[in-house]
Image (cartoon, rainbow, N blue to C red; front, top):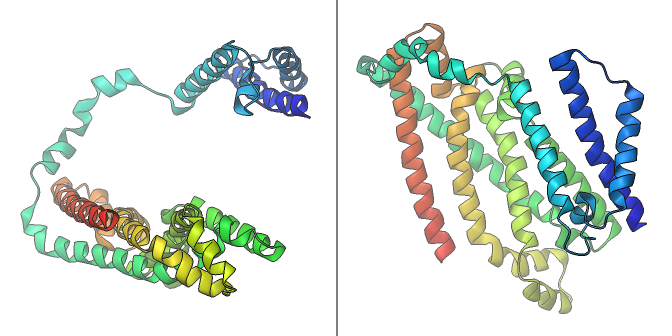
Length: 323
């Protein structure tokens, strides 16, 4: 069974390498590699490398023996192929980067010469952004707190129904978290209309999914001693959660919550680009009008708020964790 696992992992690794090289040959030299070769060649290479004890698959599965460093060469090869693939797909243009900076002259000039006449209306949009992020965080707290207990493996894996609930909550959380807030903003702009409410809902959904992951992982890292002691007294599940788990996670939860508010303020700027309200919407409008001085003012205001929030949240987290 161990050899089969190693062979399977090794095959997947070489399938990736061969598929990447085949794509590069097609992209750079217009040479097509038959599908049969792409599928069978990795099997041959995997079979050969499986004969050696210290291949990359064995290293991943923790089955290495001896002092051979074969896995290092396999890893370097995969990373090198990945780097070349990334360079080609992203279409990296270092020459353009160093020779076409003059194209941004108007933007740079506007950023360093902001239009202070627009300060009052932009401050209004900035306040809207701050409260948008605040409400999204506050509304996410009760949902995240409750769901985090149901998404903690050490609390839910004691029974079959618990495992089912754990898998459902974790899966939903992962799916919702993988969808960026800007996509949620597009959905809610259609749902409730363009404005800050749509942006708040987008950040609310994304915050719940993210905080469930952070909170549940914190629960999984608690000291099991108090939990087992309270459980031994015949306490109910809710009592175990209340007296054995909650006291250990309260301070980290508060720190994660403040950190999430910090993140939401930054993300609120992005959701504004698709109609989510706040200063992001103003930034998008001014950018469309090529009003770079107004854009510069907005960027400085955003930078100021993010800096203040960074300092504030770092101080609060330090105090909470210290206590």
